[in-house]
Image (cartoon, rainbow, N blue to C red; front, top):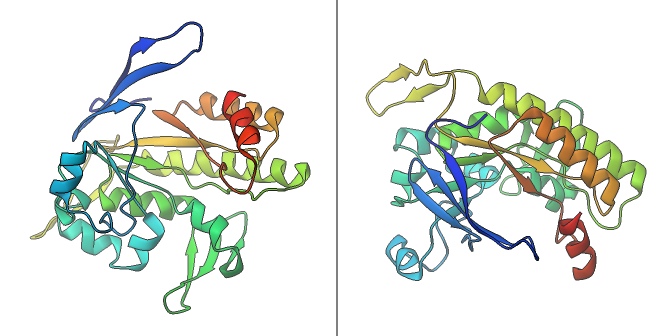
Length: 252
């Protein structure tokens, strides 16, 4: 299900290579794919101003849910008018789910069925990130495209572990979707107002996992498509595998 404020169409398609060029339409403008997306981890791309990014041709920026949750906090960003106003960026914004930090900060976290318990890398304080909380944070940040919480398995990983991780990612995706569909409370600088629209002004993407196993990747993709997300992404790549292996997973 795609929110009314979003759409996607294929502009060009090569039947021999299956390469395609498309356009994603969002509330903050269009994104012509394929596209390079600069990373603004803490609501800023290092060493570059928003004006310089526009001059470089950037169409969309990625911000990091985990880091913004810890500092300055999603409520502060929302009270400031959301990420677009907070960082003076008028084009589309995508936020990750915090799932990559589940992978990269393995020594600071414990994965459970309910979610992820982790220690802040800033002060050692304990936090518990659930699929529902990840969606709540991202909705508060006000991104155009948001991501389901997932588990990114390292390479190499045994197939049994990759399978359990894929199943957990699918389960979390269902919970993320349910939370995303709930009516949202919008925090305004002067007051708190209730938004009764059951579909948020954002697009939630499912994330395909499965490690370096093509059959698990196919199963993950099938289950996510059955959930009918507005969009889908391929996670769990560039985690130590070889480039040929990465390309094989993309092809599968």
